[in-house]
Length: 371
Image (cartoon, rainbow, N blue to C red; front, top):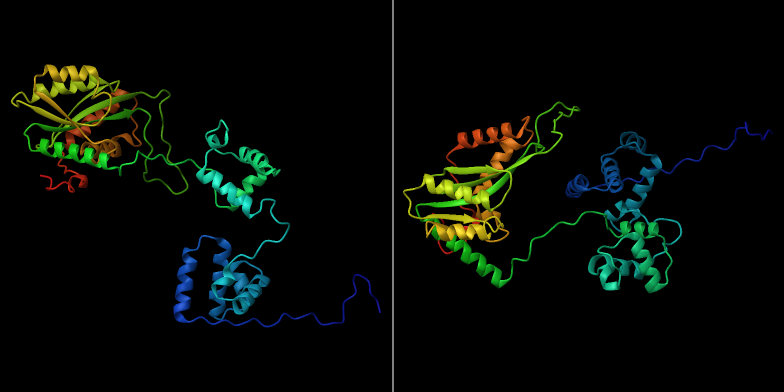
C-alpha cells in the first residue's frame, strides 16, 4: 500500500461533535441584546452575537458566514456557554498564555500609587510628571527591579492608564469664605439691577483667522476654509443696558484700561440724563487698573463698578451675546481683512438689538427671585 504524500487515508475524516444547543428565555435574550449593543469590546460583542444567533437556531456554518468568524470559534463559545459557571462568564476573555509579566501585582500597585497619588518631586526628581523612563529608573532605585520603558508602558496600558492631557480646574469653590464672598457680590449686582442706569460689561475678541465650526458639506468632501497669512485681532468692549436690552460697544487693538475708559466715556455721553451709571464687571486687570480707579474717582459718583464673582461667567448675561456673535459671525467667516470683519460684526449686533436676556440661575439661590 502506497504511503507517499499523495496517498489518501482509508480512515474516514473525524467528525466534529454536534453543536451544543442553547436556549434563552425572552427576558435573558432581551437583556443580552441590550448588553451587546452597549458593549465596546469587539471580542465580547462577537461572543454575545454568536450566542444570540445560536439561540435562534442558526447552525455553526451559518453563524460563521454571517459574522465572518471560524466555526471553531462558534463551537468553543457554545461549549463555554453550556459548561461555564454562568451565561455571562462565557463572554469574558480567557487568561493569556505565555510567560508571566515581569512586573508582579505588588509592583503594579506601586506603579499605580506613583502615577495617581505621588509626584516625581516627592521622590527627589526634578520633574513635574512621570514618564515611562523615569518610572523605570524609580523602580530600579527603590526595588532593584530592572525593567525597560516599554515594559513600563505595557504595564500602564494594562492597568488602564493612557497618555493624555489633563483637564484644567478652577480653584475650589466650596470653602465657606468663598461662598459668602460670592453671595455678597451677587446680592450687590442684584440690587444694582433695580437702578435705572444698570449695565453688564464684558469684552470679546475677533480674529481674521476664523473659528472653525460645523457646516453642511458633501459626504466625503471637506469644505475648504481659507485663512489669512497673518492673524490680526481686535477687541470689542460692550455694555448691555439690562432695562432696555441695548448694547453699546467700542473696539480697539488691545484689551486694557484705555479701552474700558473709552467705553465709560461713551456711556456717559449717551446717558447724560442719568445721575449714576452702574456697571457689573469681571475681575480682569483692565477693570481694576490704577488709571481706571482714578477715572471712577474723578467722576464724583457718576460711575460705579460692581465686581462679579470670580470664575463665574454664568453671572454675566453679556456672555450670551458674545456666544451668539461668534456663532453667527466668527465661525467660518470669509472676511478678507479686519475692517470687513468688524463691519460684519457691528452689522449683526445692530440687527439683533435689543437683546432681551434674563439673569442666570445662579441668582435664583439668593433669597428673592431676579427681576
